[in-house]
Length: 389
Ligand SMILES: NC(=O)C1=CN([C@@H]2O[C@H](COP(=O)(O)OP(=O)(O)OC[C@H]3O[C@@H](n4cnc5c(N)ncnc54)[C@H](OP(=O)(O)O)[C@@H]3O)[C@@H](O)[C@H]2O)C=CC1
Ligand SMILES: CC(=O)[C@@H](O)[C@H](O)COP(=O)(O)O
Ligand SMILES: [Mn+2]
Image (cartoon, rainbow, N blue to C red; front, side, top):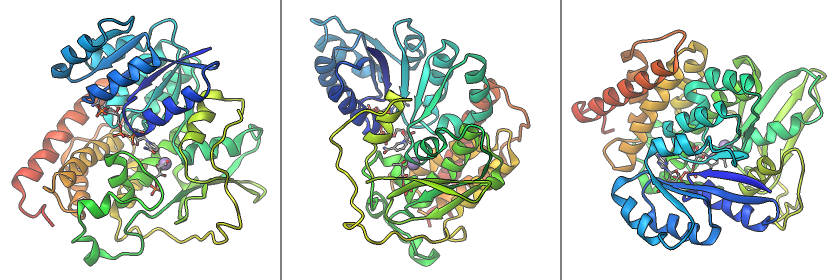
């Protein structure tokens, strides 16, 4: 039996992870559940899955969760620091990181230092501090198993190929709801339209990132660190059907692709059961139901975030941390109708030049960069009337 700490259990990845755990009761136990504010769902999950710990970050919701679980054996804790401490608990075998944003970084580092394998959905952790996190994982002999569909695909293509050099990896992008649209169209798009992803049902932040192609930019950086690749070996191609989840081309020109219907339960299950594959009843892909698989180049002029992410990766240091923080604030502003769709890229670009560059950042540097960038991005939104496009 594997004890899994599910961080962000109330979100899109978190709830699908609990479905996988529920389908495999002899293999997995949800040992820790965490939420930011959704106390009702955390309580319901705790009553059903009987974890050792339930952690709510929002202090105001703590009394409610504590009281609701008082008659159970679940230990109820509160706050970000509690997550960082509990993930080191000796009975935990694996930590699945499904919280959104920079908040994933410190718990992931704490878990790695305690020797826990990581099933990583929280891509922001590797975007912000990929070098530090992968070094720590190596040092503590910890596996980082990708949950993100593209990276799981690449990881699956690489199985058995340990000694074979990679020529390039090809990350597929759906193109999002605004694929093919130009700047005039993008300047008027609404939050509601941006939240309608063509193929995946996901949390709000990543759905906006997909619409702006920032998700693919973050994934390029995530891939660099997961697979130890030079940026010139990472290509992005738009594949609107999201059936091929990504590909690897080896030095002999052979390309391996991992395919399937868009369903996150498969990469989640693979990360939990790795290196084994386990039978399930997920809906199977049929070639005759999907006779057309198409591919196009990404439009980096209209979707500037993808170009900015490549630029940040090439610059290195704390630059990916800067674009991540700026993007988190810009997306939150867009979701509140305070920032226009195209202005999200303006905010990121201004933060890239406005924040002090650090070539070899420490964890403290990342924490400071994140804090300073958020302040700058908030100020840009507050004071710059131009950011309302
Ligand atoms: N959804 C998907 O299909 C995919 C997601 N990912 C990545 O997985 C991660 C999670 O995405 P997704 O499940 O869509 O997101 P959701 O918004 O659906 O869920 C986020 C989860 O994190 C919790 N949370 C939010 N903010 C914080 C915080 N500051 N500290 C601690 N916990 C927090 C939420 O709690 P509460 O419910 O209380 O707000 C919720 O449990 C992201 O990094 C995303 O990029 C990667 C590939 C696919
Ligand atoms: C399911 C998943 O892994 C998401 O990251 C997804 O890939 C988003 O789709 P886009 O390709 O539109 O960014
Ligand atoms: Mn993805």
